[in-house]
Length: 243
Image 1 (cartoon, rainbow, N blue to C red):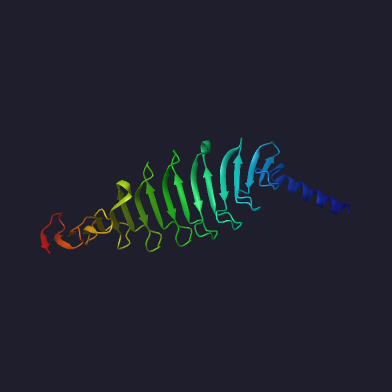
Image 2 (cartoon, rainbow, N blue to C red):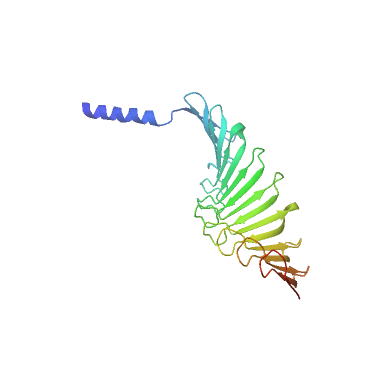
């Protein structure tokens, strides 16, 4: 019996040493309906480390705030579709500024959308993992006014970017570059009219030297009107075919 008592005492002491010590939990009925909807977890130093919320008062948790130090917000988790599982996380940096948001857009425990914010808390980039393999398939980049400026995509899901789309004012698609031979460099370029669909010009790098040597020109109806070629690859057009 003596040996057993010592063993139990040792295990208890170990658990006390490794588990966080919460001094108390404050239960709050914020809407005075007689049901608890907020729980504040306070540590031994009297600082709030976590707050749980039932924001829609259905007796299920749908938000958890995590704090460090003097109630500095570190992370917030949400259950957006109310299925009992958290599916959105917001991360905060110095001064409590939002730096990243991760979302499970399909509500399947895979965080497939990640938004990144600059020091002014403006949206700077969005990553998309469409096949759920943990790797970004496309990235959207935004300017200081949160307007889309560039889109990079891995269209064949091989881990390499092979398509670059560029946007002008008001996020209107201007041109797209393609890597068709999987060498990491664009070898085909397409330029568009303002409708973002009708092709204005297409350029090709047929010898993979990084320079266009064939140009196709289209009218506003998308009809091919002229082809220019640089047959000896000296950077000059030496053949023009009008359609």
